[in-house]
Amino acid sequence: MKMNDEAFVSDTLKRAAGERAAALVTDGMKLGLGSGSTAAHFVAALGERVREGLQVVGVPTSEATREQAEREGIPLTTLDETPELDLTIDGADEIDEDLRLIKGGGGAHLREKIVASASRRMIVIADGSKRVQTLGRFPLPIEVVPFGLRATEIAITKLVESLGLEGELRLRKAADGSTYVTDGGHYILDAHLGRIDKPNVLASTLNNIPGVVEHGLFIGLATGAILATGEGLVELGQ
Ligand code: 5RP
Image (cartoon, rainbow, N blue to C red):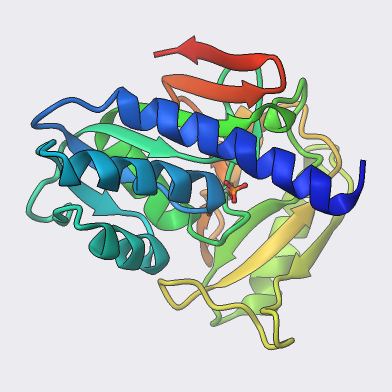
């Protein structure tokens, strides 16, 4: 299969997952709107339903999603106005059998985690290739404060080694080669670990390092998943 064909198939699967998720939304729901290419399909399908009369409000998890939702005519709110949400729909970079996730490939995981945590339910939408036995092949994004970057990097490296993990940290770059800066004004260190056997332990200990703002391990947040495969949709949880 050629690269373009693969990208087309992947995008078709992402759209199928996004459209299915949009069909689950009911009148009056307060929604978290995820970020990334799969979530963008959800926002587009949700926009169609809103234009047909569906009444919802949404909290976007990134500036990119905010701009798309505004174009789609989806009424927006903030977590300050609406601190408790019914449902968040978001993509993921990896999802395991316990619905544990790696997120943040698009750099939005800080807001995504805050929004998911404020939601009663979080449904992950993805193409089936994101489903894994063990998390970690996808580099784990760790959002850090620019101040003291080198010291934070050393602290993360020591923690990772103390947990018996191997790999390297790479400072994320933007397309133009400059240091990537998140919506929150922070940097991202991508931890290339290969496999993370105990994601719960890594998740809780990373949060203890000063300078770490948030990491992309989502544990106990996803309540369901819609995974689109060539054979159809696989739905897990709710
Ligand atoms: C952004 C994310 C995205 O949801 C994740 O990277 C998946 O993106 P895509 O749907 O484009 O594959 O976590 O921070």
